Length: 317
Ligand code: FAD
Image (cartoon, rainbow, N blue to C red; front, side):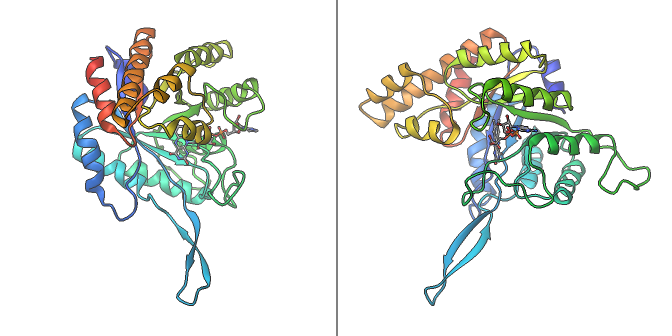
């Protein structure tokens, strides 16, 4: 079922989870161990992130180095199918521009359609690890909006080979990313909202936000979106903090702020368990307030400590 249909039919605030494909070699059982305990909270759907290939240098026996391409977390599409099969729950594969040309993107979308997957979260992706800025693949998309257009076209039965006759239409429900604290490359919020509105006007059905730790940022973002005529559901993305290192790592990687009160509480902790406790309470407070505000769904990034997310969701009900 489509994400927007889940939202339209919901009687109460829904829950969804986001997972990463296992590292290559770990096997799918590691993923099931992560998800099994979370499934009792009946998520409406599970998102599976997408990770592009990276260039790494491998040392040869003679001491020279060789540049090789590795994909550390392959299998997003098949993981979605495996999750649907095991848990009978909808899945949302992430689809990115980076590393794909438009023909590979079309093939991926056709595969998802054959697998009975009704949803995609359409993203640009970040710069490759060895690059300073995002570079599209030759023959690939530069912005999420271009990828979105390709999905919208396929939903109309328009394939890259335009002379295909009686082509079947896909029916993807399309999500896009939004940034309550602005995307780090956007010169200002106004510009970021302009391009977000463009994605919605082109056919995005809903927005999922980057993680945030201050609900006021989300409330302000929703207000600004509505003022700019962006009227689709805006799903808050939430993540627990559970280590002191995250206080510096999360702002650096995700370009978000940690509220003073939260950082002070964490820095005052005397043990890792105490940090985890503070992070759990913060997430619970955020979730309760957002639920009260009337968000359609709470989307949790579960990487790292699924038990914290489980604990919070249990207390929410
Ligand atoms: P875009 O919408 O293309 O925007 C990128 C930047 O360009 C913004 O600053 C925007 O304002 C600007 N812009 C947009 N269109 C135009 C235009 N036409 N002209 C000029 N400027 C423009 N990354 C992964 O690699 N894999 C994942 O699975 C993944 N999942 C994510 C899930 C969520 C919920 C979020 C919030 C992010 C996720 N990301 C993921 C990270 C995401 O790929 C990065 O944040 C990326 O830098 C931007 O992606 P986007 O889709 O927002 O890009």
